[in-house]
Image 1 (cartoon, one colour):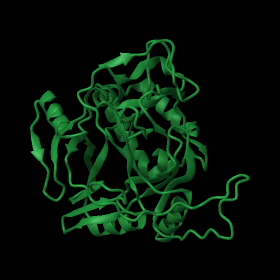
Image 2 (image 1 turned 30 degrees about the vertical axis):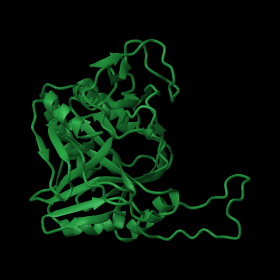
Image 3 (image 1 turned 45 degrees about the horizontal axis):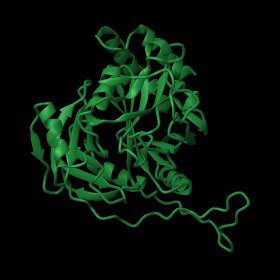
Image 4 (image 1 turned 180 degrees about the horizontal axis):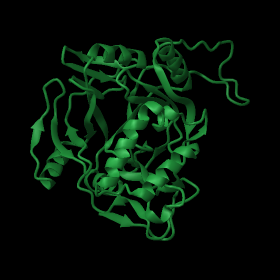
Length: 377
C-alpha cells in the first residue's frame, strides 16, 4: 500500500509539499512499474467522421476498415488510439505499456487473470483488469513497433538578446499539427482515493501533484497528476490524471505536438474546418504544458499540448488548492464547456450528482459543495 509522508519533504518542485501524515503519492511495493501509456480505446458509430477529424487533428491512420480505425502519432511505436464501430459512442478503456512480457505475466498472476496474445496486427501479450471504478485497464508488452514518421520541425526562435534566426522569416502554415504521441489521459472517479491507490499499488505510478478542494485539505486530495516511475529516466509530469467526481468516466486525452506554432496554426486549421475549440490557448500550472482543447465529432475532449514538464523519480508531490482559475498560468478563463457547466451538460451532470450521492462512495454532500466551488472559482 501507499507510504505515509513524513513532516519534512525534500526535492519538492512546487511551493507546498505534504503535511505530516498526508498521502506520499507512491506505493511501498508495487506489483510492476509500467513505462508509459500504450493506447486508448473508443466505440464510435461514424468511423468516417472520426477519420476526417483524426486527419485534421494531426493523426496518421494505420488501419481503416468498415469496423476499425487505428491511429498513431509520428513517434515510433504502436497505434495510440483504437476506435471500433459501435452502436453508441463510449470510452472503452486504456492500455499501459509494461517493461516486458514478464511484467505482464506477473500482474496477471497477482490478479489471477489470464494473459492474452494480442492480434497479429499489433502483436505482443496483454492482461486485462478493471480499476475500482470498473474502467477497463489493459497492460501490454512486446507489440510490433511501427517506424518513426517524419516529424514536424520546431520553429527557430530569436529569444531575448540572442539572434539565432537571421535573414530568415517565420511562416508556419495553417495545417494539421503533426501528433507525435499520446501524452496523458484524465479520468473522473467516484472512488478517487481507492482508485488512486489501485494505480499506485498495481502499476507503480507515482504522484507529481495533489489538488484538494478549497477548505477541505483535512479530508485529503481530490485530484492527482500521476507519472510513470522509470527511476532516473524523466517521464511526463502526468501520464494519468485522476479526479473525484460524480461519475466514473473519461474526461480528456492529450497528444503532443512539436511547439507552440504547430499547436496554434493547427488550431487555426481545425477552426477553419468547423471544429469546436473547448478552451485555449494557454499554459497550465500543474505540468506547465501549453494547451489547446477541442471537441471531436462525438463530443470527446482532446488536447494538443507541447513543452510539458518531465520529472524523474526523485521529486515528491506538490500540494495546491483545486480551483478553476488555478488550472492555467495564462490564457483565457476556463470555459463552461471545459468545466462541464454548459446548459447542454446541466441535466446530465445533475443526474450524475444525484446518483452518486445515493450510492456508497467518496462523493458526498461536502465533496459536492467543494466541486461546485471549484467551478465557480
